[in-house]
Image 1 (tube, one colour):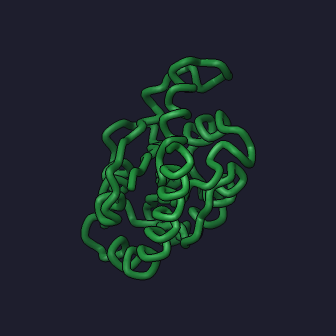
Image 2 (tube, one colour):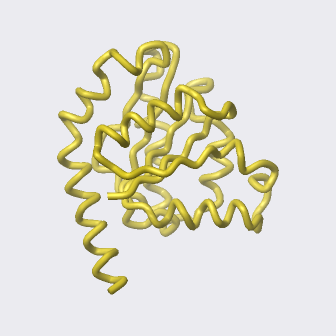
Image 3 (cartoon, rainbow, N blue to C red):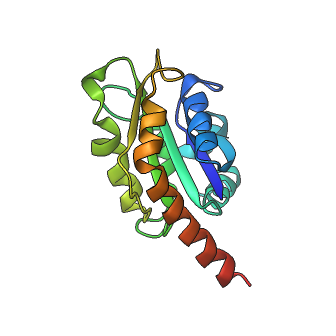
Length: 172
């Protein structure tokens, strides 16, 4: 199973990226990482070859982990600029989406569900699990990832395997 990690943190090599990489590894996915901050000004319009290449790469994955720090109760504008590059309803059609957000406190624990997951669904992703919210000060050792994997891992893996089999069968 392949995973594309989309990191919407303005700072590269962030805790957000690490949390997403840890999640992909826990799911047993072969992951590639896209640091949206590295795409530069091409995100501000449409037609940038580099951005189009990044979108096409994300679309090849079975699983898409959209990761963002929590800014003012929602995901970053940087992530939004990238997600706007995908076609509505078909841009992530059939791919398994996981919204992942890190925040400073528990007050925004529903942010992945209420802000990021609806956008992934709007783009056609299948989001069969609750989004994952982790405290940015404790995401490596607080057990939230393990609890999330125990509860949602089988559903995520089964859905991604079905997509993987479908896309591999269609390409043969």
